[in-house]
Image (cartoon, rainbow, N blue to C red):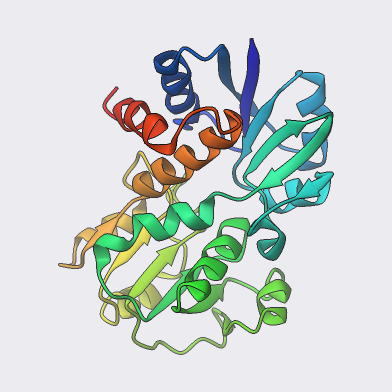
Amino acid sequence: MNLYSIFGDPISHSRSPLMHNTVFKTLGFRGCYTRTQLSDGNRLRELFFAKGLSGANVTVPHKEIAYALCDEVRGIAKKIQAVNTLVLENGRLIGYNTDADGFMSAIQSFGTIKNALILGAGGTARALSIALRDGGITATILNRSSGRLAYFIHEAFPTYTWDNFTVDSYDLIINTTSAGLSDNELPIPQLLLNDLLTHTKGVIDVIYGKETPFLREVKRTALPYKDGSDMLLEQGILASALFLGGTYTIDAIKVPMKYSFLL
């Protein structure tokens, strides 16, 4: 039996076990996927090996720490410097990032996007900013403070804090913060949010499975919006393919994983 888990804090809301276990069962793969509550991200590698895992997913707030703890990082994760998928290969911890490609698939329904505003500056924001730029979309970063903006400044993204930001027009606003996940907070101040919602064509919140205060405010407008479910599905398909080592096609994985969202 191959064992897998998702590491994060909070983690009780995660649909990942249902998603991956549905794939494993449908395809006849001997695997079991669980949740692991982890407050101290520095213990991630230790717990991965202590649990005898073959692979894992990493969610907020540990994606940047996961990058640092890998023996090798592959693909776009090297550029992002944040990892959301871990695979054990010959005793070595290999890191990937499936958030970027998953997100780009999820936003296709918004049509043509030329620029986007990202709220937050964590590992997910890193993945989405690089994915957007690689897709020819200008990404601007807005964070509460300057503490986590060094990566984005180094990568030459336009970066702002609440104190020095001036509202502009955007095709898409993306909330990558954890505000509203386990509290009743907005990702940015109410007045600023109200102003921004009159200067955008669409909104996405990467949080899924609940109506966050952010999305409640968006629903008061006529703007098209999404939660993070589509992104979760698309990145999960790619992660599962890594877990299964290329034994099954993306199409074979996609059918049962999409079905898991109906359960």
